[in-house]
Length: 535
Image (cartoon, rainbow, N blue to C red):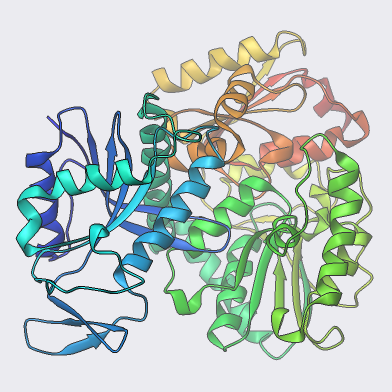
C-alpha cells in the first residue's frame, strides 16, 4: 500500500484536497509515498505543499489543489465558492505549485547531492472542467487536471515526470528514503516550534511575558542594547520586538550569528501570520549571500570573518534605499565583531536614526573576536533568570560576577561525574543511557561537548549536511549531540555537559557557563571537574 504521511491528515474542511488524496491512494503504486501539507521554511520564504508524491523510478511531483470552480478572465485567475462568491487569486495555482517546487528543490539540494529523478509541478481542480480550447501561456494543459481526469490522475503525474526528465541530471533509480527522512524531520520541527510558539501556560513563558512590558516601555526608543544573562528571556524579547516593528509597517531584519539559533528564529517566525513576519530572518552571513555575495567554504575563516562582512557593506551601499531595512533586531549581539557592526549600520535606510535593537550577554562571548559596537545605544540590563531551574541557576552563578535572580521553580539536583577529559565522552554516553533508563524521552536530552565533537554529531553533519542536522534538533525525535559553541540561544530539558577539554583554555569558564545554562530542568556534568574549582 502507498505510504501515507501523515496516515490520517487533517484536511481542514478541504474536501478538494481529501478527494485528490483518496484518488492518488487508489492509483499510485504500492512503493510510492504520498505526503499532505508538507511545510518548508527557508531563508526568504515559507511554503506549504498541498500534496507531494514521491514515486520511485519516476521522480517527485508537487501538486497544488484548488477547490470550487476555477476560471480565467483576461489573464486573471478566479475561484468561485459554494456560495457563488468569486475571489481573485493573487498567484495562479500553477505558479503556486512552481514556487513550492523550487523551494523544495533548494531545500533538498542543501541536504543531498543528487535528486531521485525529476521534480515536477501540477495543479488539480477537482470541481472544475476546463474548456476544450484551453490556451493559457502560463499554464500548459498537460500540467492541469480537471474533474474529468481524476480517474487518470496518477497517469498524468507520470506523464509530466517523464516530460521533465533530464537524462543528464536526474537519476530515478536513487532511493527516496533519505528524501522522506528529511521531509518528515522538517515537518516535525515545524510542528514542535508551533507548539513552542503557542505555549502560554508554561511558567517560564509566563515570566517572559512580564519581561515583555519592557518592550512596550521602550517603544519610543530607536536604539537600545538589552543585556542579560543566560535564561533572561533575551531571545523572546528579540522576537517580540521584531514582530512589533513589523506590525508597524516597517521593513525589519531579525538576525544572529549562530546557525542553530538562526534556524530557531526562522521556524518560530514561520508560525506568525505573514503580515507579522520580518522581511529577513536568519544568520547575519545569510543576508549578503541572499543579496548575491559568493558562497565560501566552512573552513575559510577569513571569508566569514572579513570578506563576507565587507561584501555585505558594499552590497548595502550599492542598493537603493528601498532595498534596505527600517529596523534591525540582533540576538546574541556579543558575537558580532566591529567590522560586522559597520555592515549592519549600512543595511539601515537611515544609518543615523534607523531602529536598532541588540540583545547581548557578555558572559557568552566565547568566540575569538572583539565585538564592541561602534554604534551608540541605550543600555538596559535584565537581572532575572526565567528559564533554568533554581538548582541550575545556583550551579552556574559562581561563574558570573553578578549572579542572576532565579525566578523559575526547583528542578532536579545537578549530577557531577568526575573523570579525565579523555574518558569524558564515554562517561557522558553512559549518563545519556541512564537518563533514558530513568524515564527521560530521548528528544528531551542533549549531549554537549566542550572539546572535540561527538562522533554522532560529525557523522550527521558529514552525511546529511548542516541544515538537516539542525532540523534534527528541532524535530526532537532523538538525543541531540552538539557542541557548546553551536548551542548558544538554545535549550533542552536535560543536558549532559561533557567537559572533554578546551581548544582555548582562556575561554573555558565562559564555555562552561554557556553549557550549564542550556539545561532547563536536569543537568549532568561529566569530565574534569577541577575547572569548576578555579572559579
